[in-house]
Amino acid sequence: MRASSGRLQDNPVVGQKRVLLAAPRGYCAGVDRAVVAVEKALERYGAPVYVRKQIVHNIHVVTELEAKGAIFVEEVDEVPEGAHVVFSAHGVSPAVVTAASDRGLHAIDATCPLVTKVHREAVRFARDDFEILLIGHEGHEEVEGTAGEAPDHVTIVNSPDEADTVQVKDPSKVVWLSQTTLSVDETMETVNRLRTRFPELHNPPSDDICYATQNRQVAIKKVAAAADLVIVVGSSNSSNSVRLVEVALEYGAKAAYRVDYAEEVQQEWLDGVETVGVTSGASVPEVLVREVLDALDDAGYRDVEEVKTAEEDLMFSLPKELRHDASGQRDDRALGGRATGGGA
Image (tube, rainbow, N blue to C red; front, side, top):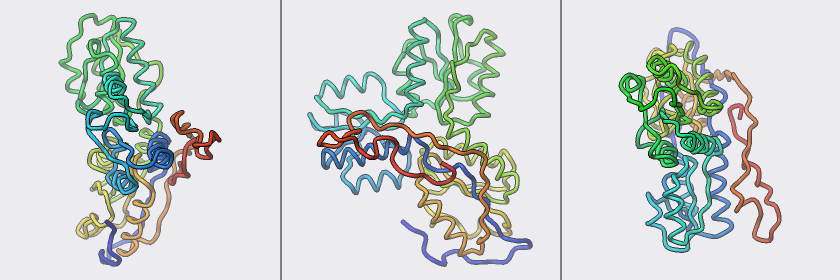
């Protein structure tokens, strides 16, 4: 799926047309690691390699990996016994790990290390008999994985309003953790409302919302204040992409839309628009952003200014099974995988 050249018209506006391109945007270190892990597994073991759930929440990435031989399944019981299976960047519960082992599967854990950090926090606080209020979206794979580490100790808090009604057994032994891809502002509102009810609420040892989610939200806040329209490239099941739309509207954009592909940009969105802000979620390859910029170029938005609010240079090592090639030599992509755009 690609935008057709010249599909959008260059209609006049009162002022000067321009694009404010947010940076950082696009791939974060955890997404890069997970995608490269599937690619390397296919190279090492040959197709098919199975992946539980979408490796990352982006339809384009999933489609490209399917074309290379990856097979995406909902649960490990769909994977043939003895096959290779990759756990997605969002993480899995111990029950999934056990189920994979019981089937004799060769599991490769591509969980983002920042998600793994939250899992370890859940285990530690449960061991100390804390009640854990997990701020996140019920049903999201990451939340299911984290809650699965200590199911008897975790209560999911979906929103600030739920903070007003959640019940705990011992207000002196309560801690909050969070899904890594939430809105920073909404999460802190939830925490503040929880603390009003439970003054002794403990904090996690370090911030759970990932650096990439925070950086992309900070960048779009700056862009949104000057934008008539914001376009967020990202899939509908990508929590951090959906949050970027909400943050853009909250911080001044007159309109904001999410698209998977450039061809989804509508002509009527551009009516009377002088300044278009563009960004992308943390699981979006830069090529999709470039296609949106090409489409906007057709519509006369040729002046592109990058608005950079942070530098990102974090890289994560690949899962241990993939750090060396078949001959035992260290793979040249053992640390991270590829250069990413948008200040990453």
